[in-house]
Length: 112
Image 1 (cartoon, rainbow, N blue to C red):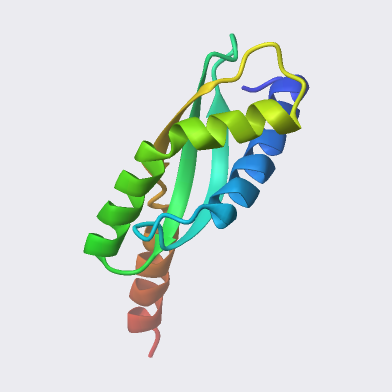
Image 2: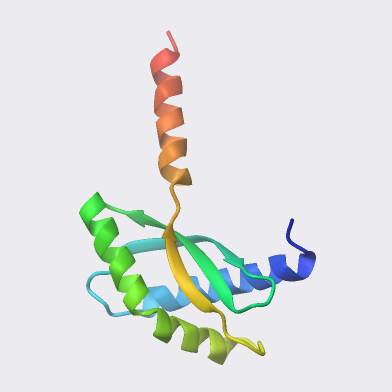
């Protein structure tokens, strides 16, 4: 269970990273939504969960582009926040959107 401080930090990081991703000019990065961020208690690492619109190939290219631009995103975090340490970012695909759509499809099929 995250403390209120950690929830605030995660929310600020989610907003900053989301805004910074939209400013990136990497052609591999498609339409990305930052769904959540989980920061370690010592603030040295942060898992950034993203949802990507597009096919599996586009998703893989976007994840590669995000991983290669983590340094730029970390510098944006350092510039916009007053944290003692800037966490090392790792990007993970958030499958909850796909799972929700699958459940919705299954429920629609069951209705008479």
